[in-house]
Amino acid sequence: MAEALFRRAVCARQEYRIASAGVETVNGQSPNELSIEAMDEIGVDISHLRSTALTSRMVEEADYIFGMTRPHIDRVVKEFPRAEDKVFLLREFEDALEPDENEIADPIGGSLGIHIHCRNQIEQAVKFLIGYLERWDVITTDDDEQKIVESVALGSDHAGYELKEFLKRHLQNKRIRTKDFGPDSTYSADYPDFAKTVSQSVASGQFEIGILVCGTGIGMSIAANKQPGVRAGLVHDEQTARLARQHNNANVLCLGARRTTPELAIKMINAFFESHFEGGRHQRRISKLENGNSNDGKRK
Image (cartoon, rainbow, N blue to C red; front, top):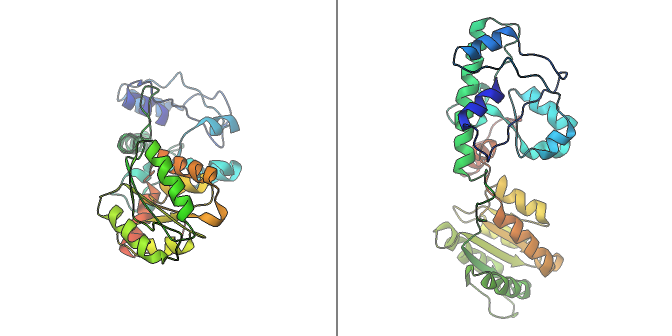
């Protein structure tokens, strides 16, 4: 039902490729009669569809994988650990739901009414999901221009000065508006001063992104995160740079000059700029950081 409902919702738009598969199924099985009847009621024929077992190739090719229940997504992650960052519950994009309400139970074995209820849950979830994908520009077409950051605030201490200067030239060559908040030499400087000014310029909206450099990046990240509205991430490679944006919605990037070559710094910045915050369960966690709330630590 989910595949057919998603296809109907996007009306065969070319930027979406949709497939369904099961973690505990065999290939070639027909939908059960009650599922067919529930979908016929809204004018969707699924009688021709056949079941498919989830494969490693499908997992690798997918941008996102959505499961109905936590056991479903846990099973996918267990069998395909590298897919963890792109596996979600289908209903977790419905903000009004409590965490214990965002699963869709398998209707197999239930009545027609249960199948219809399941269909309605999926249909509602798909609407929220599509809204999320389009709101965060997750789905793009081949004709879309690459969206990049337009403005960057830079700062460092004396240990990060040379790398900061290199990155400033690189960003200016890319026609990205930059402002260097200092220092202007390798003379001893206190990193909290520059972390504060850069972070405040980002939190106020003057600049989209901040980049801070000190010897290890640790001091800059601690100082920057003291500023309201700032989510600073200390990154070490392209993956951590990408995830800082996707999962943590970071708006300040912190680098350690002693362990970061100019070439690596550019790769990390590019990965950070080209990524988008994924929302969903990550938004719930960001909200807890901002509101000072916590729960019992269970995976949601």
